[in-house]
Amino acid sequence: MKPRAVVFAYHNVGVRCLQVLLARGVDVALVVTHEDNPSENIWFGSVASVAAEHSIPVLTPDDPKSPALRAALSVARPDFIFSFYYRHMLPVDLLALAARGAYNMHGSLLPKYRGRVPTNWAVLHGETETGATLHEMAAKPDAGAIIAQTAVPILPDDTAAQVFDKVTVAAEQTLWRVLPALLAGEAPHLPNDLAHGSYYGGRKPEDGRIDWTRPAQQVYNLIRAVAPPYPGAFTDLDGRRFIIARARLAARGALRPDLPPGLHVSDNAVFAICGDGRSIAIHELRHQHDGSETVVTPAEFAQLIQTPRHS
Image 1: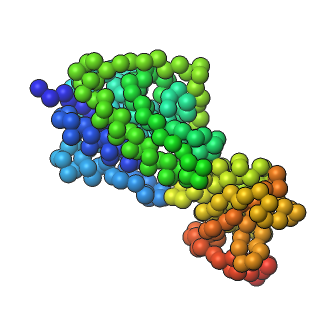
Image 2: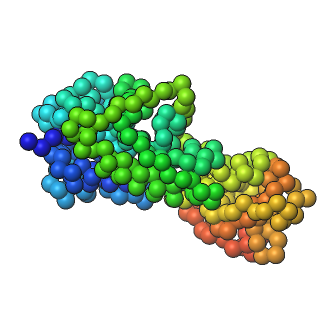
Image 3: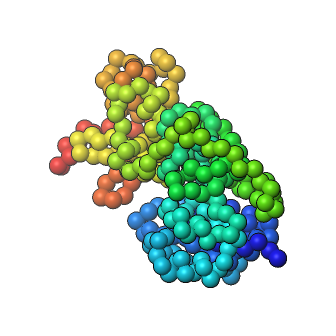
């Protein structure tokens, strides 16, 4: 008899890992996912669509603690519960309904970067490596035993979106590799030593505000960590908001260090001076106005900052 699973999933990792389960012959009795938020930039794949293609029932509860969801899982009688980038913590009593265990795929090399948006935090902190970890679910987030993990590099100019694409592949590889042993009851359960790890919460768009007095490497890490399709690192000038969509850390001495920290225009190029005198070349600058964003040229940027906001 095929092992039966209930899958909580969202985003690209949810799509790929659900497809791995199906490819490995797991009977997915139920998929639990999220309704897409109309105010969110939906740039990722749809778990609900994959489930529909395979005629798998789908639920989208607002609260994973709801009695209706618990009843649905009781009826499904899963051997396993899997969570792949589902955005809510699952209550322990729900996890207990899985006869053979409940497992989550997390986007970091646990125990580092437990919690929310681990890829963005890893880029923000200048890490050179991250990855994906399949672990047993417990009462605390990302705290259960480690089943398997796969590392990926973070290159110096990678954005969080580029790293997330690598982490998605790492998640798929991790699950594909260890799933046969997990289904056979032979997968290792390794210690997840939280004392040697870290935990970070979610990020808000306001967290992308740039402090140009910070060292250039820190500013550049922020730009990379929240670059589109995330909300973007931004700065406000005379009431106008500008988003740094693409940039590159300039070599030392490449641009004038005698200017004050902030954005400048010179030789038909936009650049920024940071607190340590190093500069960042701005390759794509966006002006956010009336709820929309427009890419502006260096000449257009110069004109905007010379024009009073009220005119």
